[in-house]
Length: 164
Image 1 (cartoon, rainbow, N blue to C red):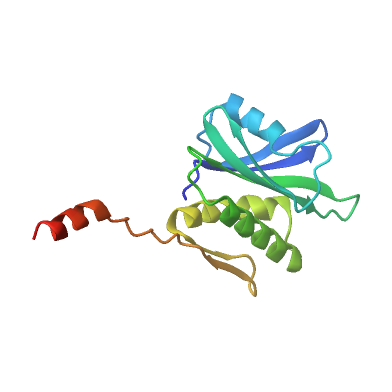
Image 2 (image 1 turned 180 degrees about the horizontal axis):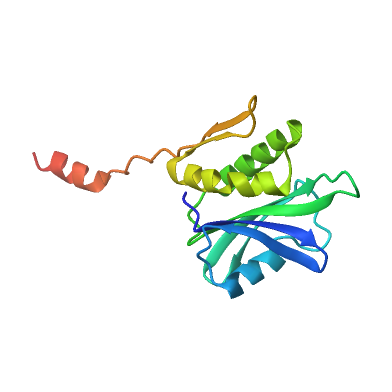
């Protein structure tokens, strides 16, 4: 379930803006389209959506970024994939859990989300995310996908049994 890239988008002074893409491997035009499509107008914290941009697929989780000096900002964390064969529900649970843990520990800030993105990206590849977010808080998620055993072709077995 390795994504092509993870993106962080937030509402800026002039509208939605890309804060960071890790790794930064997608063309600027694709990143711009993902930025604008990932958080529809009226999106609320906790909402999760999946869509396509060209031949890429993405899932985004919208959350609220607390600010002391003014009202909270809205942001989204996005996983971009080459095909549809990824665990959409798993992505939602991971994003939701990480944002909740950061918020619980009063660490839900743009710079911290940016900082953990490389570890999050590696974790999606390995199926295990372990991110130390403070001296007392660590995010530890194990979501390795188990491979389904191949289905046997019963017709060949039946044929062998019949001709013995």
